[in-house]
Length: 329
Image (cartoon, rainbow, N blue to C red; front, side, top):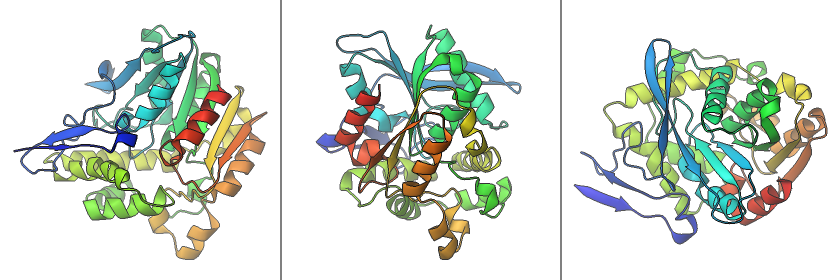
């Protein structure tokens, strides 16, 4: 049977996809049924005896090409599909935009490998080299902010500006989040349902829920019906461990490139939040404080804050975010 899900007009370029499977809402774990806002290509990688591939979009400027490039790194629970409005805004202002799905996410391979920000950064550098891009602006959201930070530390000569949108890792989670093994986290990931995913997105990402955000849930929940969902859950657990065990917060002072922080002041994201008591949750993840602290630690960093906004400014306050991003560029 076939069913098409359409996004409201405001998000048409950010999310649109059709589904077809044994269950109406089933998605494959590499999102074959999800149509990205722009054509997807694949970058081949050989690692740990495996041939895998990294999906990416390479979108040319639509007018007034300025010879500059912006690379967008997505967050942990997302892929390139949620960057549509940002890609459109950037290409209309002359930028070439590269949007990878990191290995383990989106349309890229769900490989059983050792996940590290160092390795992900190396693969992104190899992709840019292959595309002939010697210098780029790197915008990282959430987990993508941790990756962008590691990329900037490893390859400062490649970066024009480092742009961090509500990055996670502004605290060292090891200091207050109880340790869980990858296997324990895997068992938790296996329990994911549409209801639990929507509850998490509502409580963690936005200050108020809009019907358009349901499409994010449809993608996040659609894979839970797949016969391959255990592999997806295992990789999700492995990347959770990566985030927990590989902090970047202690190296912010070592960043050598111009940096701009975009912070939703109502963001209260904590990786492993469910492992904390309400009292502990209230003591951490306060981005209205963490944003200022982080900007003070990064040499000459600029801080841009959004009132009444949570974890995803480019979706919750898209106009304000795009104006701030273009000004920063």
